[in-house]
Image (cartoon, rainbow, N blue to C red; front, side, top):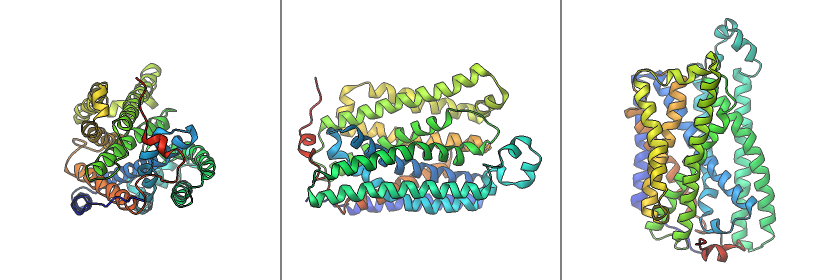
Length: 388
């Protein structure tokens, strides 16, 4: 049962990135506490979507009966190990509720009829209780999936796949509802006067987009250091197609959300974009849309790029970074952060997120078999070929 050895150099780089993120956040609080609290929420939510993306991808493979993905499945299975760190970060966010959410101020609520109407849902005790419930479900089901998959490595019992499919069904149903609500609670409620029904889907599109980017980077990194020999250009091609699909899906959902806003032209909806299309935000938003969709879309049209792990990983680094920028766009716009929305603090937090996520996932991954050796579909996955 072959295991991956995490190279010391990679460990040092990832720990260095983690330290850079911590230093940037500490300096941020010293310079501009309002922006630093916003940065902490960005950092927390970005790590959250990366860790949940693994559970979503894993559950999707089991429910669909996919065979091609068996050799790459161990990476997304492992992302649940990042959730304990996310839990600690959420506790830190709880301490900053009054800095982030205007509905947490009782005097503001009393003088605002919309917030008063929403106060049965948007109040501090219920907010914290909901997040705790979501987190418990995510971690419990994610760990159950990982535990049964690892147990199958030892037992080689094909019947355990039925258990994994059942767990995946429970995970997917739970994830669909809880992540939608968590996106509303953590991000959309930053602007509690804003109305839209599209936001949870938009948040999910960012989760899928960022998650598949992270998986590609991790898989290529492991391969470059002697692991995952079973993963071929055929598997990379499918991962590339997933990235292409979610790039397009994100653009479709973003357009749909903003098109409905333009079409209805209601004040309680239009200010969301109005804030993000003025001053420094105008340049940031234009660059964001180009780098998030147009450039990756054009590159990923190429079949050759999707089949070349090195080239695909370069695109994945761009899309992972833009997934982080997407969270900045949502959070900073909601808090009306002054000045250009991306600077040294945000860059440091991005590197910090890469360091935390990469180190935890690779360290946990290296403790078990590189691929699910007990999965009855493993051999078919190893010999997977794209139809011509």
